Length: 331
Image (cartoon, rainbow, N blue to C red):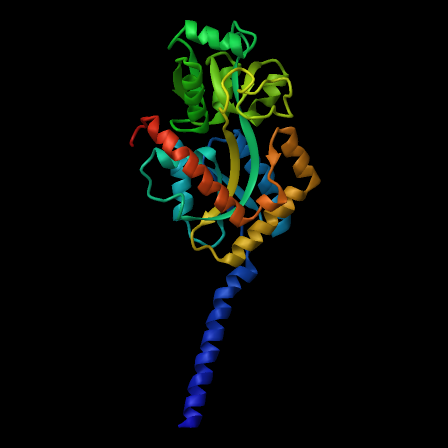
């Protein structure tokens, strides 16, 4: 009996060890094929640009290609939903930002929960929001802009990247603080909105700062204020909202990287290591800095740091967005 029991025990232990090996093997071999990074916004916008810079360099660390897939629509919820439903094996990444991982969750009925259906990988970058306008606006600074808006209620158009986006919430904030009113025009992505602003088809936008940099420097659009407590180093002459008389009106357009819930910890660790390696690369850092992005510090580049930051942003903004009673199609 003892011999039989020992044989059974040995066989059980062997089977468990074998099963553990099978489970561990995918993580050890990861990645062994191309990875998809879902960007829930149009090509050419700031999130897409960031994704392409990251994916190009992460390939060096991971040894596999990362393919960008732009999945737009419904305030980013279609793309985020696809990522949430993907197999949790590390071969589908979700590149998120304030709009897709904060704003949309307060406005849309979704098949996923932003707080529980994803595993954080790393915070990536931060950029303030800027109040910008077309170059032909008949005002030279923020104070003149506010006076002009008050004299023309509901006659000025302002671009947003969908209802509840950072651009939309930022614009609502600006209206509330300055006691002005203007009409919001939704776009599917930041790139087409900026194109229409440059082309004079739209008057104003509260835009993610990095996507405006080239156009402001080139005189193709005007920058009136930065939505932060300090001036933005990339455009040091643009005043803060505090300086123009609307104190405390801050909103940061940040990016993070997630994977579907239940992705193996070892896979997340490999992805995190690739992100850390990428954000430490001098060429990548220069490219992002040239775009006006502020790179997350090393201690912010951990899954735990992203989890904590994301939770704090949801707790801050969801009550504000819901109180604004923003209506979205299909809500």
